[in-house]
Image (cartoon, rainbow, N blue to C red; front, side, top):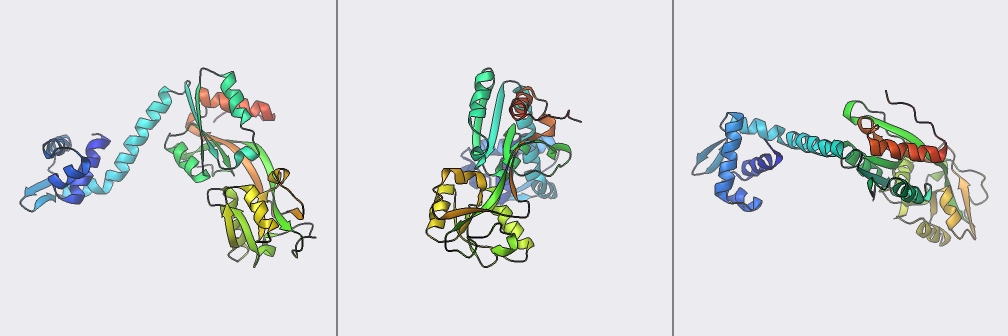
Length: 302
């Protein structure tokens, strides 16, 4: 049984027709019919009753269709994990969360490549959620993300090392009631017009979550992928911006103040991998390389 034949079965089930399914799949009806018969032989059951009205699913087909999506997902995962295992010392696919290079220099990755030229390194930018999904699907080997993942268990367990920490601040323009404040709490953000990074960034979802914990929905009037754009909008008095404090070093702060946001909301960068792949050669070397640069001790895997 393979994912190709299962996908073909799904299409026949949904269209109730070999000819319509074949057209959607860009194969011949004869070839598709042969594949469906092969699947029936493999499962030792009849999946469809052939009639003038089309392909009528049997009870076996209904059962298989209900499970088909999960079977395809598991077979694809097994294939990806086998490829990952075969390339564990030769390839390293890294997922970097949007914004992490404000805190962790991309030069670290270039230096790793120079130190280990035998490892083919690929790196991509994704949202935190996408990196988590791709690690679990064995489509990435290592992630650099914002915020700590739940420990998980089994195939969904993660190993993580804290690589960098930066406080989150509120960028406030001169003339705003908060401009002279020494600190700002989440409760104070109620009824304020807020500026934020967009939904691809951890800081956006975390701001919304913290405000909801205070009992209100934040009024985010503008979002951007660019901290400098938030600074410009704040300078124009469109709103006050929730930003990692470190990015203010790149901003024109004339008429602006970065005021600490209380409540322990720190922008924390973690190196992350699935526990089952933590000792794969390329992953282990990346973990050790980043840890050495930051004076971090990596505990042995249990």
